[in-house]
Image (cartoon, rainbow, N blue to C red; front, side):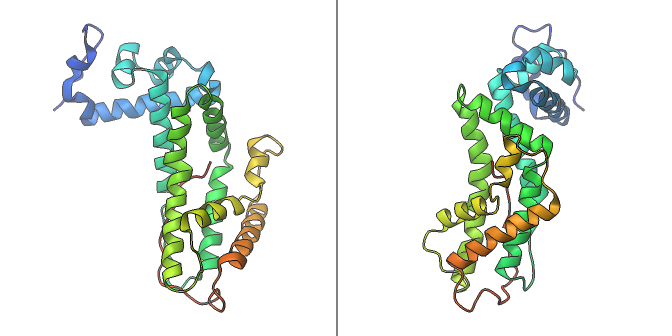
Length: 240
């Protein structure tokens, strides 16, 4: 059984904790800190947030906080990666027996866009954008764990469908990025920049269906678009 350790009295808190960081108690403490950090960054933005605020909201001492994260930048980067991982899990795995490509892409696009325009997700993207000029590694972390990962998953799905003769694509990565942009149809940017506060489900479906139609017109193999495909899996991530 792991005993709780008070790190405040040690000159080297990391040495005091030792392997406790990887223990169930250590993992729970890390989660507690991340939840506090999420609340602080969303409320104050990156520049307005402080480690003092995070410690207070998370209910931990500053000494404990710095054992887990030695800077605000490292904490925010970890939060970015955790947010992206959770989004990928929420989108989970798409698998339809006999589903045609248009349906798979439409359903995936709707689910992804619905997630992207949630207020907490929009706030998260705005915070990353604001911090990236001063700390480009934060922007890279967001891009790698979110949009880039999502594009790789879409590219893999497109490749499998092309191998079945259902699509005609020479560059799968480029096609994946094109789909991810088409499925937004400018709608996400209107929410991101405050032109509108929300995107109704009907509008999301309309935007995505329009994007899918353009994509299939460009890449659909003649006579194959309406045919059923084998079970397809598409593990998604957020596109920023």
